[in-house]
Image 1 (cartoon, rainbow, N blue to C red):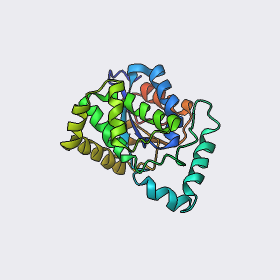
Image 2: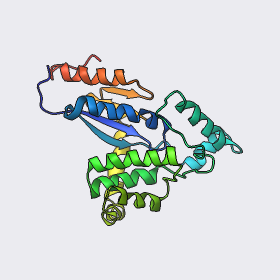
Image 3: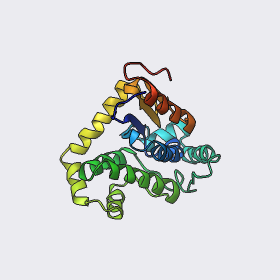
Length: 222
């Protein structure tokens, strides 16, 4: 058994506009419920929709690419009854970039704490996917501070003095060094295990259990 009192660290890489990260949200919540303080989830952000306004038409079609991508998102979410998708996302509501939200979330972590950032990330995803809120708009994001509450001025300070940008840059550098392919990606065991994409809950949980049960001097076989 791993008798270390230190929790299992999970670097969780996502893009807030990624439907697969929205689909994975209940799995994230269930991991916390099952494993509690035996795990520590560290949110990191990757650039998948950093240039959404150009990427989607380029990949899905200049004339009707946003409509096609909306249909793709609906189709991806359809098997999961918890995953509500608003009919206006990517049709009428088209965030230009996810990076604004990622930078904002790093500022929230600085102005408040990691737990508040986690809560805010869930709020942002829910606002976009279920309410069709343009979460690429910084003013809208700042308005969400009042719902927790988080000091808006402290968030603005972290945005303007470069600390949030520095934190986001660290995520991006870490993602490159870890060879992150996309969102969501779960990184465990100091980068030795990377679970990418629509990974089932049992697989996630069994990887954590394996790490908790293995002696610290042995590499996980999972």
